[in-house]
Length: 592
Image (tube, rainbow, N blue to C red):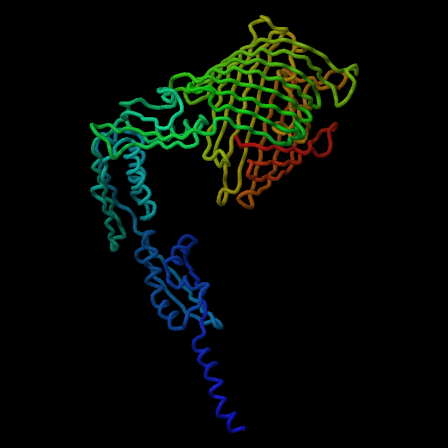
């Protein structure tokens, strides 16, 4: 029996020995001597990197190790390093392997000449000259294939975008002299003729012929410009008439120096219903409901209605819009708005009728119109105090005034702005005391600027400001919405909504004739959707020159939710002997 066991033992060991000889291991690749971008480029090009999380046999590792220096050297050439020296080390670590590549890049190749040939007709256009200058400014810089390819392709795109639809790159050479560490770039385009717009064909529209011409930023016969086609796409999407908008230049059918434009359209849902609960610290809990007729008839008229029922605000509004012909998106708008507002300092019930004209004007949205406002109000009242409480002011007024406003905004991404701004200016005035309880004139200005910075742009700096001034012969006749107050979610946080302003002898806030508010805020995002913020707000409403700003600071949470940006802030007053504690602020809505 013992003799049988001795004979069987080698048979049992044989599979174990075979298993050991076939055992596989992983590879740890270390690149030293260069910064992170070059480390990543080398790691992506070296075959060993495929086995960081895969098994590899000893025969495979040695074969791949022998190839690694040449692969690393080739990976550096697109960055201008043609004389790199790679020292490699192979070290077993248990069942795994460690490969170290010590890199000495040597002197890089510099671009000594750039020759870009274009027809004079193309060089007459500023956008093409700018694209060409990106290439010519490479002279004296280190050769970088990715930067060169991007600049070359950008110039080709600029030619196409400006109507040179037949442009061809006929000379394309990058001559590298490794001995002299120099490179010469030679490019030449045969641009061909420049095309103009032909006819524009709208397909699938539900409107009268010619109605959509108001959205065209060009006329047939103008020079072809791809940016204008993008403007047309954005304008048609913004009109909210269509579910599908495709702007297609018919470049395969161009003839006689012209190219037709086909616009494929599919109507959106004609009537939309909106509604649901909402919350805001300025308004409290509430529900909102709306009905919008995106187009009433084949002339593109619109009709929008909305009802808001909240703890401190109730509104019922209607607005009818009539688009007019022309490329400035002009429209006449007629509306009415009933408003029942109850803030920490005032209550008012007003009915306002509006008739105005809106249009695009030198890149701005311009609005000019008339307002008729009538209602009753109390100012200085707190919560459920009786109306007879001393210090509360009661009033009623009817005002007929003209209003003109200019607004403009720009952003890289309106859903979440990395770089963007908005500006708004408004002027209101009665015609002396014509059909009005008092005469007044008023100017307001609002601005906001957003800039992302830091690694992967995970931080944002947000600056905003508001200013206003009123001139009137009877301030007591102005309802609360025409007086200036400070405090609240979009003003000075740490204070209640409209709780800051000039006070009467009873300590009641009555509002002021002037306003000045500024804010600075920094946000940091830990993930794509979650971040924190800190802020400092300063401002006040005041009369004359008696400006003593209130200060508020705090921290907040930011969430890019499916329904939009949600901002939750905790603010507290600074150096205010009469105000203490923490105030919660909640805002839901876009950045600009």
